[in-house]
Every structure is written in structure tokens, then in C-alpha cells.
Image: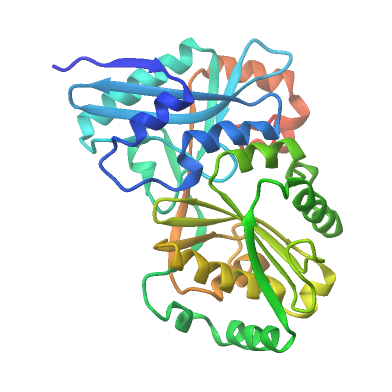
Length: 345
């Protein structure tokens, strides 16, 4: 019988171990740099990197842990976007032993509950020992065909022809140096839509994201303007790692909506990513599970390829979670279906 060792490691150690995995470089949101940078969204988020090792393989998991105010307990969740464990082995016995060691570790660390979003491109829910649920469909653009845009639906092709006639252009730049500009643009668009304040990310967050080196900024401006300093019609941040580009955060202006700037931006960003050797552009899904969701409708126009996005959860300490329910009765009453009900994740 093989022995296991579980330990917490630094972000740099975790990233080094990740490079030893028998798979292509994982999408950016699974990388240690992103997990650490994303913690800048909230001062309460603590990036943890847990590794379970044996002679049979390595199981690893990067998460955010928070202290639950007013209680002695903690919770754990994926970073914004996607997370979940990775493993060098798919052996069922190995994974079971790793999961048991991890669950015991979390119990000892006073973590009462965990909620995760698995990355659809990886299907890494297969490495998880807790409860798994299908959530919604997501969209992926295959960039390998020479004419991948032939898969766009007619309405998208029509919008792109209209955009071409409007004399707009696409510019790419590093996010570094443009963080404040993106914050201002993104906040204005989000406030105009009346979105929850949870999605109004701080300047510190975007600076941390830029420092990872994985974030690219794409913007649309009018051709009669010059450079990225011109008025933006639409803007988006893409995260890139290995063969994958991920559509992360985006916004547009009222002027941009009249000329199809968001669609033009996405098309141009896909072409640019392909030129850099990316194999796919991951777009994600809608803002809810509805098949009629407007954001899903927008993204679906760029590809017929659908994957299933899954979530996972585990209650490590039922008694501790009951104490959290007592400490947050209104939140529990409002969201009894959420594994982590006392805060938005």
C-alpha cells in the first residue's frame, strides 16, 4: 500500500508542480498566478495551494479560503471563473485516497464547506471526491480550422459586415498600463446595466491580473481615431495559457452597441489568438442557466461547440456549518440551496 503526503505549498512551488502534469498547459484560471491575483478582488480571500503526493502520482488543488466573520470557521471556493483539482493519475483508488486526505486536512483547518466551478475544457470534476452537479452549457470556438469563422451563425456574419462598413478597428495591448482605463470603462458599463456590485472589480484586482503576464486587452475604436488612447467602443480582457484563450471580462458603450463593436472585437480577438498559436477561444456561458439567456445567445453565434459546465461542493463539517446557519439566518433563509450562502462566490 502506497503512502500519501499532503502539504501546503507556495504559488511558485505549485506552478512548478503543475508543469510536471502529463497534459498541456491548463487554462489560465487554473494557474497559480491567476489564483493569487484573483484574491485581490477581496481582502478576505486567501489563496491556498494544496498538494497530495505519493509514488503513484500527484493530486493538486488551488483554492480561495476565507474566515467566516463572527464564527471560528472557514469556507473555500474556486477563484472567479473556474478551478478544481488536477491530477497526474486517473486511478480510482489513488483519487479516493487523495480525496480522503484532502477532506481530513480541510476538517483540521476548520473549513466547513467548499464550492467549486470546474473548467469545462478540462473536465477536471473527474478528480473531485465531493458532490458534482451539471450547471449550464458553455461555448467554445475551435480555432484550428483555417476558416473557423465559417461556423458563425448568419446574424453574426451580418453584424460583422455592418461593423466593417462603420470603419472601426481592433487594437490589442498589454493590460499593464491600461488598468485604470479598463476599470473606468467596465464600471460605467456594469453600472448602466444595474449589475450587482460584486462584479465591480477594483483597480488593485486589474493590476494584479496584469502582473501575471497572462492578460491581454482588446479594444475597438473608430478608424478615424488613433491608438488605444482613442474613445473605446468595446473592450475585453482575455486570459491566455497554453493553447487556450479565455474571454474573461468585457464591456461596451452605447456608441459601440450601434455598430456591433462587441461582435467585431470577439471576431478579431479570435483571429489574433489563432495567429499566436492558440487552439481554442473559450467563451463561457450565460449569466444564468436559461437556454434563452441573452449573453449565451450572443456567445452561441460564434460556435456550434457546446460543453457542460459543472460545479462541485462538499460539507466537511456539518456541525460547523449549522453554526454558520445560526450566525447568518437571513442569508441562509434567502439561499438555502447554496453551499456557501453567507457570501457571494
